[in-house]
Length: 369
Image (cartoon, helix red, strand yellow):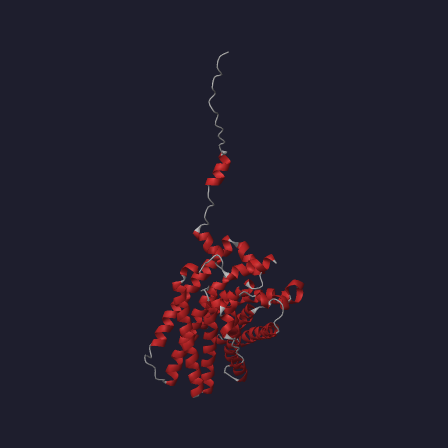
């Protein structure tokens, strides 16, 4: 017998299938920049326009105060120049934010629907209309009485009233939406929308419309305030990063005092009562929220600005050294806070539309529950 023929070793090679190889090699496509911009944008960014228009009104008030009292000011033209620059800056900011929000509604309507159904997000839907009402407030009184401004006022007030009906109606008719279950500091934004609308209507001479809106806002502000004061369920779930919105306890009564001043024609006793009812939270409450910059920081700016505006109206009525000093101190704090927010925003532009925004994560967490 012959020797066995040696066989060459057989190498078994298992090649991955084409589908498996494509699955491994094909990476997940990144989200387009335009899509990520719109999906991460929300109504909370209108805090910026609220602060800008608040500064516009403040600098106009300071300019009028200097001209009426002949106060000594290092540069008397500065308030007027600041007013004009801030007016155009505020207009560009508001148009930009509104355009982005309209695109978000068109291309990502499901996100808008989720925000509308969320107990925090629905309150921020009032901020665009508050911003546009403040635009009307910043218009000269002569131009405010033309037909275009009156049409714009109705265009702004109708969506705000519809949001009122939705927000307030669910408290009375839906068991899962009782105010005691969904109340949070942002619930005061709905009342602020009514106050600012009444403020603008009073400047146009519409006393009955302004009184109607003011009554609606004051009624629900008192209900919301009492509910929040009792610290019922839901308050403990408010995330630390959103705690700057507690400054709305400063903004709401200040706006109410300004609105009633326009409705009544003078800064009378009810205005003073609202002005003195401003609440200040303890500083340690905001310790965790100040660790890293977030768009929620803008909630510090416009409440202080409205408080400064209320103090300016108070100074016109009282006309004393203490009142004038209080107005100057609050105005200075307001300007410094606004400038600080502008600087922080410019430095942290890469985190403006961050994916882990506490506003969005809070909504996702609550909806999951």
